[in-house]
Image (cartoon, rainbow, N blue to C red; front, top):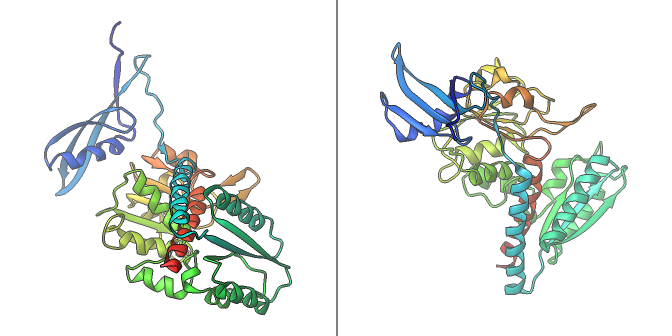
Length: 356
């Protein structure tokens, strides 16, 4: 059989050449195979005393002259979450066998928000799959701060309860900060209590908010290097942006990145986004990040979940960004399932802490 013809092209050359950089030095020629199997010839060059990388990419082609479309590799959070749940289930079974104690998560739901009800139902299903007992405490939409404090206080004092999760947002008029502060710090599986936030910032995390922890697991399990990389996070919330910045900039495995934290007051936000080796979008605006805001070969993590007339979409315009990035998370099926898996991990951690 005759050999298939090949073509050399420029699209996303950086994305594969960047995989070769670690194997060569400045001024050398590099050749390697990227994640997609494309053969790449690259060189580090210098222009006006500024280093840059140039690459050409060879594709298999059944039709000479045709350049096959190149899109980013999907980072499948759903598949990884399923794998992690299996690992957690084994750990839960071992914990029960060794202690005769079954980990228990109690969820507090106030109000009738449909999305919150779906989230809570899914979390309880996840608990069932891994062998964690879950209990739900439902309050009416007119519940007061004192009503929540009474429920949370009782659960904090109950030795049979290992993890407490207060589903946010709470009804209007409820002081969320007081309610979160009432959770026993060793049962705070959402990682939002002031004591746990402080430990995280000090580099001694006890509980980490579930979404940032899920993002870190995604990077780790996909062997995406963070050391020395420039990570740009769009969004500074206590749930995602700030804890993720602390994790990725910390010392040790999964950290040692240079982190830029952008927000709604950042001037020329797109300029910073284009500098990112790893770009995390958690800004809460549908399809906000477009292809012209992304550096070639970047890894793009889409944390956003937005309900639109087209269904669920992320903060990233997937189609345009997938043509530029090397790897990208889809919505749905990206970070969301990992958030739920990390809640299970935190609950098991809480049971271990309280047992020891």
